Image (cartoon, rainbow, N blue to C red; front, side, top):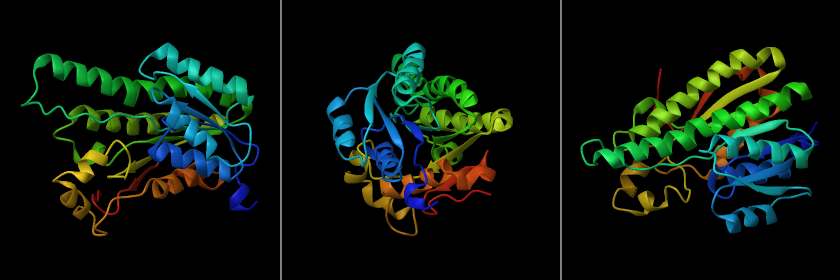
Length: 256
């Protein structure tokens, strides 16, 4: 099978697909033959722009607040109803908020942790729960979780973000072990800085040059570059990588 059509007939749900990495993944899946459910939370117009840019037909948008457990499950059920099943899940939706422990008050600290863990960890966990039920009935599937190098290097100004991504790595590995007998393969991609709406203000600010200099490539990643790694992991070519957490940070952080 050619790479160009390796997702022919596959049904995919990409969370946080209205922009950034999720948008690039959705576009790549559609170009390679998949039918795609484009999840978004608040910005329907951006989701519709992604939809308009997808090759092929029968794609659609689905909204939901993934920090709400019932809403997260409903996103899966609505997607499966439209797609007729589910073969690929990409858990990409996430938030990044600054909350340095020495510069926020108790209410801010508590609220940042609640929001961040709700979207970045509990959301993927609940979406995955729903997706797995359908993948088991369908004979298998691929789950790719988008995490972060912050899970390894730490995030001193956004500790809830780093903790949520470390937990998502651990969840990925736990589920890779649990779901292998069902032919469901689970991996994670851990990017560094990427040119997205979420990072734009940091990259355009006074610290932008320092951020770019963290990589010997002297730049940050483009969404399409991270999407290529996600697409490989979501394909049939990566089965034996199940349980892997793939670094995609331009050598800005090297772990052993």
